[in-house]
Length: 291
Image 1 (cartoon, one colour):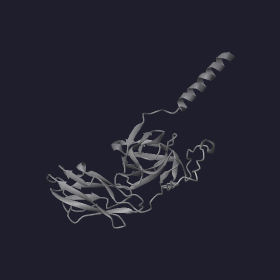
Image 2 (cartoon, rainbow, N blue to C red):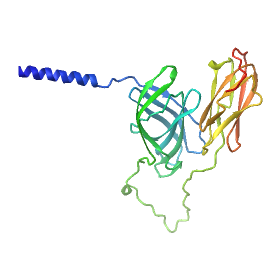
Image 3 (cartoon, helix red, strand yellow):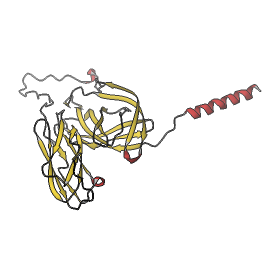
């Protein structure tokens, strides 16, 4: 009888553990848009996040063109909702040792850019001390491609752990007194804003209405302001929204009627870029006001 009671107790405990075990679900990969960059010896080839009911994991593929192999980088993940409003920004260090983070709201667009990169010889480019986010979350995948994330816990650190070699493994090289070669200056990050980068710079429409809208990404290095879109030629031909976006940001353009026109994208320094529009078909969705 005693053995029977122990067997029944063991079965009850096993059943309870099975009921409390987390249910795994298939992960969904959500691709991002790499922002063009001109001031770093590195290019972001791809970025994305994996989302499942237990969390979100960021990924980035960086193509470096530096003096030696890249050992450390920080990538900016900027999340936007369907109206292209900035929802949240995370600064993620790579290599990424299983880091996960939380997004405070639904998202529709992910735009990524390299903020900082370090090479094996010690040279570093970008923003020194870029903050690195670290967080945990629960996530729900919704219809239409949008993702709503319910954050339970967040923590951020402005001092990320940077993988470095032990001083004992790095021999000190002392130049010979007879050497006439001058030491190369250490690379520094320029604080001067770069030119506006717009991708694409032209759009061609063969259909009108919101269902056929196209998007353009805008960015500018070393710039913390916003961009404003305007036009004196696109009335009743095309509409751009929103009027103002952060850096980096994204515009949505909707065709209305046949014609050609252009939008001017301007930063707070007076620099501008032109987005050319060509609409080759009639309008089935005529609008008279701009978003």
